[in-house]
Structure formats: structure tokens, C-alpha cells
Length: 351
Image (cartoon, rainbow, N blue to C red; front, side):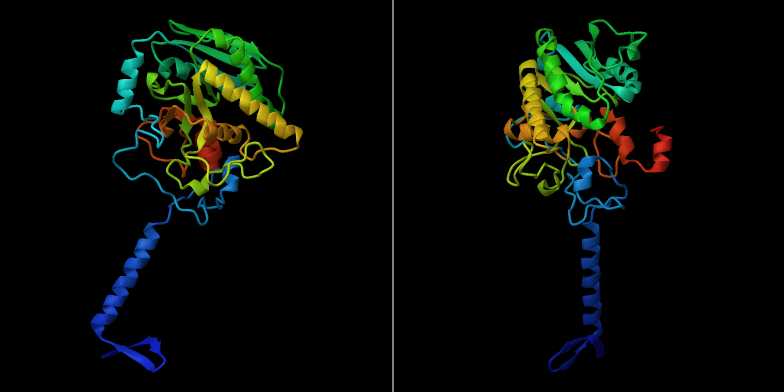
């Protein structure tokens, strides 16, 4: 008999056989292996403002919060409330494209180009020409404080048009965040409302790298945040300051959506941008600022008005240790990707 000196009872040491000792050590090893395998392997930090509130440490790990990424295999293609959850190559997307193919549809793509963001506008438009609703009637609406950034004009294909809408200069990120939704709402009201059927708002520091077709069309369309897709609800960086109009209670919310791309019918988009604008200006008047900027107000609105179509992270993706794996990257955010990279990779990507 072997004595295992760490096992004692009030009556004295407990003697274990060699087989028992081997079994205990084997079980202990299994437990350690299981616990280690459950941890999220995250090695890089995202510096975007919304992740500063997630408890992401210098190694990129979210303290006390476990990733719940979807397992490999079949992806969900419907939300809990019955709206389509769009993956571009899924059969339901093929069906949606076939349905819209029978209709004459005019779509607007609206971007805000101010300050140094002018450096991105040509790449954005060239990539959209190649991949955004190819073969469809599309008007690009560029709200800019520097119309010269589009000289000479970008060459567009048949059925495509560009409208430049001059706006006043908006120096400083804070002022831009306060005014963005107001500017979008005003542009949608006039001239966009009478010219297109659907309109999508996008950040200009992005690139379409694969086809984005009619599967994205719907009355109210939102895109899942790639770094939060499949994560537990308690990791969503909803605004939790009760003094803010963007505040979301703990028992509210289904998904966390990115502000990189959202859209819908002109009427729905005017309602969304106008409502968010009012909430932002109301908070600003009270000295309150939501931690996720306009993305917080967008998510507050979408809690109350669930999207009729939800786009998978294929339609807003960037390289990050937190980003979900997707079958196809369709729209890549260059700006957020640069935020998520370390200094060496920033140089490689020319950030």
C-alpha cells in the first residue's frame, strides 16, 4: 500500500493503492484539460471605445467573460423573432436574390466624408462599383466638407450615379459624433427620399471585397458586430448610464449591431436617423455622452424596433483576435481593423 500524504482525515492519514492514486491523478488531469480548453484564446486588444468597457485586458482577454462562438457547421439563418439572418451563400439568400430580381429597385449608398476620411472615398467607391449590388441602379450620396476630394470624378458603370452633398466642416471627433445622425437624417429627407427606394448608411473607411447583393434588402436592416457575434449578452457594451437616452436595461436586447453598415426603406431610415439624432442632441444638451457614440443610440433604437433583416458579420468584418470566423468576408472595415492591430501589423496594413 502507498501512502498519499496530502489526503488526511480527523482520524489520521488515508492509505491509497497505486491504482487509486493513478485514477485520482488521471481525473485531475482531465479536469485541468477541460477547464483550460474552455477559455477563450484571445491574444490581441481592440482599442475601439466600446471595448474599453468590456474589461479587455492588455493581452486581449475579457476578464471573467467567456466567448460563446457558434460551433462549426450550420449557421443560424433566422433570428428569434423570425427575421432572416443573412449569410451570402446560404440558400435563403439565393431565394431572396431571386425574389428581388423581379423588381426594379433603386438603392442609395450614403457616406459621410469629412477631414482626413477623404483619403478613403475613392477606394470605397471603386470597391462598391465592383461588389455592391452589381447590375443594379445605385446612387452614391457623398456628404463632404471637401468636394475637391472627388476631382476628377470617379468613373461609374451603367445605372450608377454620384451625388456630392456639401456640408460645413466638422472639426473634432466629438462634434462629428454629435452631428452625424442629424446630417444623415437631413440628407435622407432631401434629396434622397424622392430618388431611391432603399438607402444604406456606411462608414467610408471600408472596402467591399466580395459581392453584396439583393439579399441585404429589407424594410429595416442591421448588421451584427463581428467581435460580439456569439458572445453572451452580458458582454454587449450597451449604454448602462440611466441618465443617457441610449441606456439599455439588463433584460433588453437580442444582438449587438455595428454602425459600419445599416439601412432599409427610405421611410424607415429617416425614422431611425431622426430618432437617434434627437436622442444624441438631447443627451448633449444635458452634458451626457454615450460611451459607444452613435453606435449606442443605434442599438437603443434597434432594441425598440427589431430589424426585419439581420446581416451576418460577413457584411461588417475586420481582422481582430475577437472577430468571429465567417465563410466569406464581404465588407471589411479598414478603420476598425487598424484599431485592433498591434504596431507591427499596423505598418504591414499601412494604417
